[in-house]
Amino acid sequence: MGVLLLVGTRKGLFLIRGGANRSSWELEGPLLTGWSVFHAMQDPRDGNLYVAGNNFVYGGTVQRSSDLGQTWERSEGLGLPEETGLKLEEVWHVEPGHESEPETLYLGATPGALFRSGDKGETWEALMGLVQHETREQWQPGAGGMCCHSIQIDPEDPKQMYAAISAAGAFRTDDGGETWMPRNKNVAADFMPDPFPEVGQCVHKLLLHPEQRERLWQQNHCGVYRSDDRGDDWERLEGNGLPAGFGFPLALHPRDPDIAYVIPEEGAENRVTPNGRLGVYRTTDGGASWELLQNGLPQQAWAAVMREGFASDRNDPAGIYFGTQSGSVFASASEGDEWMEVARQLPPILSVEVGEWS
Amino acid sequence: MVVVRIPSLLADQAGGQGTFEVEAATVGEALRGLPVRDLVLDERGELRRLVNVYVDGEDARRGDGLETPLAGAQEIRVIAAVAGG
View 1 (tube, each protein chain N blue to C red):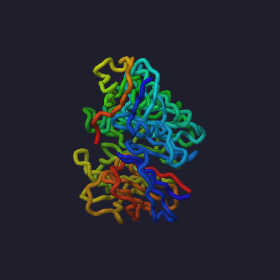
View 2 (cartoon, rainbow over the protein chains, first blue to last red; view 1 turned 30 degrees about the horizontal axis):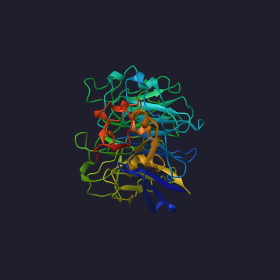
View 3 (cartoon, rainbow over the protein chains, first blue to last red; view 1 turned 120 degrees about the horizontal axis):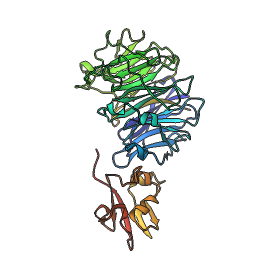
View 4 (cartoon, rainbow over the protein chains, first blue to last red; view 1 turned 30 degrees about the vertical axis):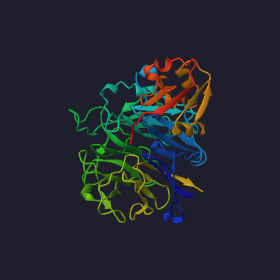
């Protein structure tokens, strides 16, 4: 099995196959030309590829491929019920369901919408407990619209899930998606009159650690945070070594819950990597301190990495991957110590995920 | 019988087929019969804002929209508005 990078771009999907030792890489694509691939992933349960793809004219779709991108099938009838008074704008993130529910998938979308499929993406049903949440009037769209971009499922209990929306905040369900509780305590919303409201936080990416189910990480508009109690409370982390709290993407180590990676930007008003260079920041102590990783990364760069543009594999040592808005894909087979550029001059990169090929 | 022609991006989503012959009384009925109906029409069944439809060269929006009758019409063209980047 080799590492397969799924690289979603503004103009189609690219697949990058890693050779032995993750030191050589082969580019294939673009696939799904004409579609903006906001997110693409390979379902580890059956190997199917799923794409959340949008077209300016024809709207948002989910596309599925069971042959690694040779042919695609589109979900039909994707939309929000009339009773919501809302219309689907764009699809943002497609997430495999729990291992015990092999037909189930989740889809995040604008405006602040979450869907579930029970048939491998053929049909989708809006989760009304979130779409019609009692706090919805306090939500507001971020620059990317009111996108539901993060969906995480508890590895042990399929009824426990997390969803994050910009700018509504993080939510948890303990009943399989019927009801959702805001989980934003001590997460700042500096752009609001009350900087610590119940909802309205601008989460940029939220991830659950696969080996420590109580531990969540989030990169927020206003800081980097960790929770050790399933989101009940959050601790802000960027005091020691991070040049800025602002950023979009986040990646976790596949085994060690204390290791996380971010790629900060100067700030909300200047969305480029700090100090005119491209650097990844790693913590190995749960966010108490951060170190700059830059071996093999350009030392003169004003780059940006989107919220879906960062991923890790499950190898040992772990591989870490990201793609930039300027169309480069960087890979590290050494947990971030050394980097190599494995593709360049692609269209603006919106997402990077890891799958496998044989 | 009316011929419906769709752009190549939509044809890709219809298994490569870009031309369809349909029996329909209205523009809406013809579009709802396409395998890409969900890309041309939104979840309320309304024509997407940047999709233009011409019936024998006449913009259907200047007629009765999706209710535009097709009696005697030869060809429907679905065309994306000039937009995007």
